[in-house]
Amino acid sequence: INSILYYGPLLITHVSATLDPVLWTIPAALIGTLAICIPFFLADVWGRKPLMILGLVIIAISDYTIGFLFLTQSGKVALGFMVLFLIGFGMGPGGLWWLLVVEAFPPQVRDVAFGFVNGVNWILNLVVSLIFAYQSSLNSSGSISTSFTITYIVFGGFALFSVLYFGVVMRENKSIDLDDTVSPYSP
Image (cartoon, rainbow, N blue to C red; front, top):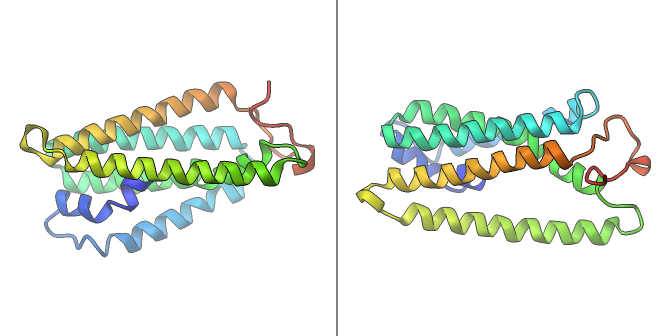
């Protein structure tokens, strides 16, 4: 999400000469906020696992497509996939992450574990932001497009790895009371 939101204005400047890059942040925030509401309504209907996997597949497809489109300079299509990325993130990791973290730990250690996981999350957000900033500054082949392509392909790879991880490891806790949940990651 950091690569889309934090660097959105830079990306918009690169893919479109007609769009105001600062104004992009308004619809992006609105779309992201609405997409995060999807799991509120569907987590106990469809289940957490299918929503997470669907969101991650959308993210992977969007990342790979955005990366390719930077090479072809197809700005408006890339913008469409940036929006699709926001929807995938909202319905998957963005909307489900905190629910899954709470369900992952037993009540007696939940507070401490939640704090630890939250700290790790912010550290990893910083790492992702720094990677994107570094990758964006590279001028391999004399083109920022190549740097963006590499970045989005790497992030798409992480999304695909996450699909496999959640598909194999995650247990479904659909329609189960929080106190009765079994860690979604336990065997």
